[in-house]
Image (tube, rainbow, N blue to C red; front, side, top):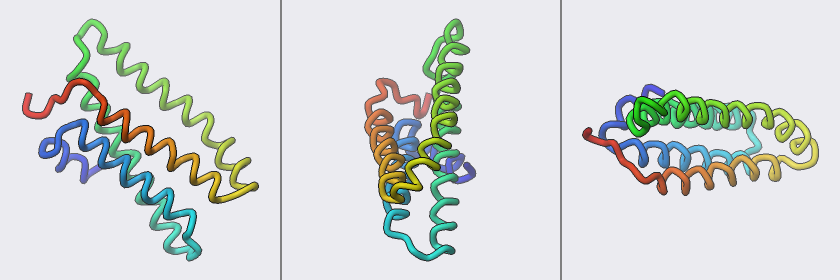
Length: 129
């Protein structure tokens, strides 16, 4: 989150979010081949930090894009979708993790790749406004 504060004005909102999702995807895929416990812990902390930074980026981006009348709706939708993901995560993490670490991390890495594409397709960049 602290790194996000420094790069959000330099890269812009779209590219900051995309960069954070790239970091998330890379480290999720690296977790598939990770065997060392210390390295795994470090990778998980990096993933959590990148996801938190992306969420913070969208908390900055959403009020800048939506007009005042629909701002609460836009922020609420973003928060609601995040909560749905938070509800699904324990099932994916626990059920799939018992079957295969690669499958579980692959789902999260794949979703991160989808988020990269979605971030880059955002229609408005508010950098410098």
